[in-house]
Image 1 (cartoon, rainbow, N blue to C red):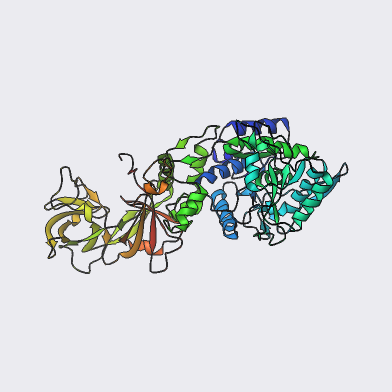
Image 2 (tube, helix red, strand yellow):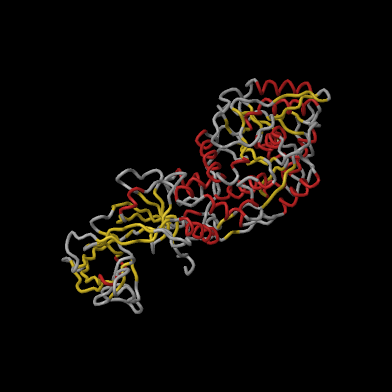
Length: 598
């Protein structure tokens, strides 16, 4: 049994209507293997909504001993880029690593689809690919552009059987002739062209003879269909543009609806799972495959509701606006819902998977409260994050009864959440830093932290009493002088003495200076785009930068490690800007939901 299978960890597989369909197909032996696919268009970075589709497609393959193809639906060269391809590969590998990477199917570099003659017709298919480790050399994801030759051949076949024609209507007239949901469309005057003329014109389109927008290849279906997507949809358009995979080899490109179903067929996909907006496209998906009279079993499309989280924008167009207008620092800005940003912020992949799986799979679009996501992240980090001491807004506290230069080491707990916690030695002495708001010269009612004449416990160390407050010329407090009850340390005669407040601290002589980025929700509104202007709901406090004091062990922190700064939140070393001697930490999330009351 695979260590990644659900039953090996004691957890049962999720249950939903799509999994029920797959289970029925497995029980009846309909397919030799379950094959799904995750097919993003490389025109932007993946976001939290894609995580649901990734987990669904890879999860179904994982639970049924199948495979899931990572395929780039790259049919629009003017919007796609290698940068996006690389980011998608990186994000998918990160999200499924150790969970479903054994289902992640790649192809050998340069391997084209094979051709086979069946009943006098040429059938195209990718050789079966067994799941392989995502980091194996000589492998790459699938691309729709891998099949441009084969998709073109299928288009020719539709022309030969009278099911497609070349149309000279302009894009504007094509849309006008299409009609509306309550009004039938009008047939193109070019719909009755002969097969010979259509084949000739399509060949000349392929040869680059015509300018952009002058001709298209359209399916011949039904201009009066109540489903507007069946009103002679465009299958190919002219685009004189270089493609990131095929270069200048093509100047005509298939439309998504035409390429997608054929890519599924060529790859042997059994269950083509998409979001609900493609439900009305399904009759076209089926029509294209049925019209080609293909010899192998056909894939089928199933739809589910997309993930719509509150307080987030997941539209690629609007994410591009945020990036291009420099409202955020880039696609991996930790405030963005992109998977790159989520990873850089320090969210563990298992937390994102738990959330994506936990929201369930339904047929109804609804808003998911982002507090659900944040709860999962906190729960995951609580279990895995090592505890450390850090002070974000430091003020110096001097323990006057400890001699200068004397070093006292105390034991601090690394992992109190574990059954057998471990400890580390932390330096302690005459001068320490505490949080500025842990002291109040004029305390409010029920203030149990440090105040003049009051006592508080320095966590892991001892009880201290405030004797004196030192101010600068402006009257601001710059130093607090205290007496330490050293007998109240662990193992001391007064170790059991109780005080109401406990605060954290960092030894001043040993403190590591660091930049700490306090990230918060990017938007203040649950539905930022509800009124059409999402930018007016930007949270002005979504990022605050402070210069903090950290305990010395954090000087050796590495990207990917996650820490709980005690009493403050969960943090991780920034993967891009941190350097040796200049640590930069990102706050992943606060310890508690600070938005609940608001």
